[in-house]
Image 1 (cartoon, rainbow, N blue to C red):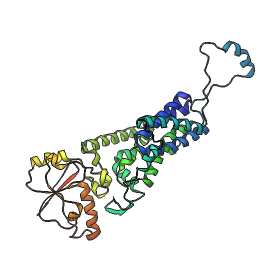
Image 2 (image 1 turned 90 degrees about the vertical axis):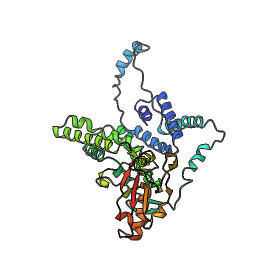
Image 3 (image 1 turned 180 degrees about the horizontal axis):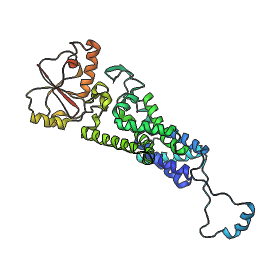
Length: 378
């Protein structure tokens, strides 16, 4: 997108070629990058109607042109003519041809001409339409269209949300850059955000990672506004930046499990989201250290992840979420946060907040690495 922006700003063949090559790199890196193709087309169409970023020099009158024609021809330092931009469809076609060559090379020149389309067809092959998505203590198949919006609001630091909102106010007060500059930020961010909200499984805020850089650059418009503003604006910006640093330090080194204070103080992420928002099998090293300092002869382990706990010296008796759906017998229970979220939702559906919901009535002894909740059942 950056290379495409450079091409539409000052069109020439080299910049168009670089836009096509980098599009191919994106497509080769991740199948879902195909969404960049319609985004590129929309931006190219807008570029055809948007005023140029830099005004061209005024053309001389016909008489002046005739007088200077002979002397200017071939003169050293004569201004070169601005290259003419291809039509939007032609530009996109050239980019796609170059992108296809790059992808073909990245896949080591397969003989199957449809190899990439076959790859596209596999994206949702493991999709389970009956999978119960989890959101705010509830589970249901198919999930929610609001899932990614809620995930964004609780997984993004509040200072960042405040700064983005302030940037939005500045934007709507007509303190804007040119049409193309704004389009190259907002169209990709909104397309990715809406596209994933309607098509992606409700598994994690990680799907929205492509949106964050665009929103951060959009937010950066506050810099000159605050610099030229009053002392209170500067003080507010400093306070928000300090807040961001504190957020980073408090969760370190477990940033995958970060949730902001919308979920509570201290944050209670497992009551809002599960899976890769919270727990992806990390924390085994911290759990190993904890068990070394606090030995437990025998414990039950509900682990959500692809690693081998035994490799890290975590050798408990394996249990599943279904084993937590009734009050468990006495003992020590080490539960991945994902297991806690799912078990709590199932228990709430069966018992509400009553005595049968033992997780609602029992506080963990401690939480290790923001990933494992340890319970002592007497």
